Image (cartoon, rainbow, N blue to C red; front, side, top):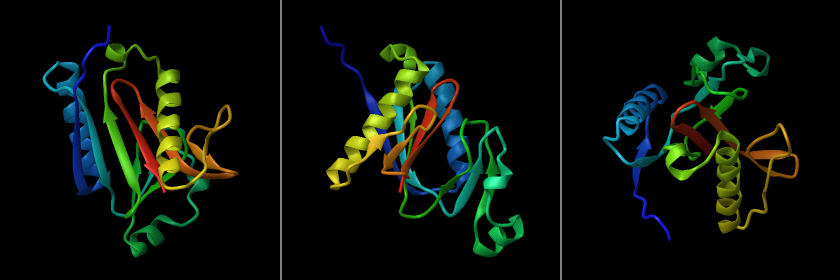
Length: 161
């Protein structure tokens, strides 16, 4: 017996990183309270770098003043992972979903996101594969083409370049 599920998809265009984060937090709270169904935000960001909770500054290859000159922002996040670039023409997907409702743990969720990126890449003729252990995302050879950043509760993200 299959269970019918609803999923809302919001196509938002280019959205400032801070505004997108506020929207995700609101939707996360509303989802947890059962006020909204599972939701996917599809958008792009203006040039933005984010550092995960490990704060790997050494992987930021330009100074913060150079970022300002380039018109890019730097944001600190509580997600896992390393530094990530978000920018125009880069697909960003923020799923706000109840893992409990779909019976997924964190590992299965991340693996499913990886497979979704690999399948999406294949639609464009790109042969990608999931990352090896300890290297999440979608890869073509030794080049990472898709990143996954996951934060506790009901939120994750996909970034494809």
